[in-house]
View 1 (cartoon, rainbow, N blue to C red):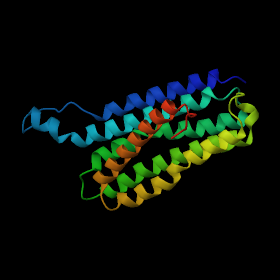
View 2: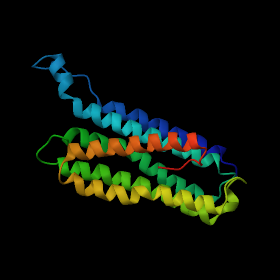
View 3: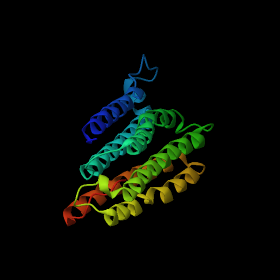
Length: 205
């Protein structure tokens, strides 16, 4: 079948997930120390929102770039894509969890570890996506062969190496873990700009 229905459904999931992130930023109700102080005190919510918004945005860009190179989809590929969307739809939960417990003495490390684990799951899903396409190059358009798919699989495997490190880092410092996720997101932004400037094929994050 063509990719149009898969892409349309996926775009809907991305749009809902990225919109849900903002719901964790609440309007302060009768703050005892004034509105300005209450807004400043919500900085963990802002930080978690920005990082997760950037991450979902990058996933969407990479997903779009991936399926630009896919000519048609089969049933197994639909389920691999559903697994990726399962993770994307879950991102608002660990975002809210980390925002709530980021500065807590009880729970910050677990919240950061859960956030990192979700990102690891996302990376595994991208690897599974390209692993399947590398085995079924007939699903790709003529400009992308099995060798290119294997190269993209190799590059997308970077997250499987990096995200376990962030899980371990979560038990050292939750704020630092969030900062590292922000850095990883920026890396993928600038990597994509560099790849496109060089004329290289797009790579998934």
